[in-house]
Image 1 (cartoon, rainbow, N blue to C red):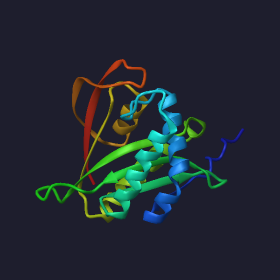
Image 2: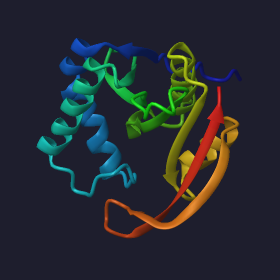
Image 3: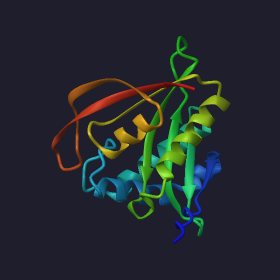
Amino acid sequence: MTAAAPAPFTIRRLGANEAAASIEALADVLIDCVEGGASVSFMGPLPREKALGFWRQVAEGVARHERVLLAAEDANGAIVGTVQLVTAMPENQPHRADVAKLLVHRRARRQGLAQRLMAAVEAAARDEGKTVLVLDTATGGDAERLYERADWHRVGVVPDYALMPDGAFCSTTFFCKKV
């Protein structure tokens, strides 16, 4: 018995125009993640207009060269995952960036896509001349284990830092990595 081949996903960097043209699809991914219980800065249920507004702001940030937006597409060209690299930092931190909003639609999970998105965002950071990356995630979740497996270093935990989409408090774990 042979193992099934990994699902064919393509990960690519979206320019400003592509980001603006993709806000509907990106909103679908965000809404799905919030509906699935992900603590990604939004409360549930997430209204579509709020999700679209968020992605409009992201697209504007891409246009201003303040962030890098990566999208993962399935074999049909549908966006099923995304991650961002926030590159706009204070002048005393030109070497640093934040990794934000690693999102994978529930239908595309458990296929290695989040791991591939993280490798791609680290490569994008190197391309941007960033050597120190920082991120945060809900303590105890799948993402925390993903970052540990990818050699990110746990910096610390802040209890009751954020709320889950259902309103419950959750602790947040901060990670960093030199790339």
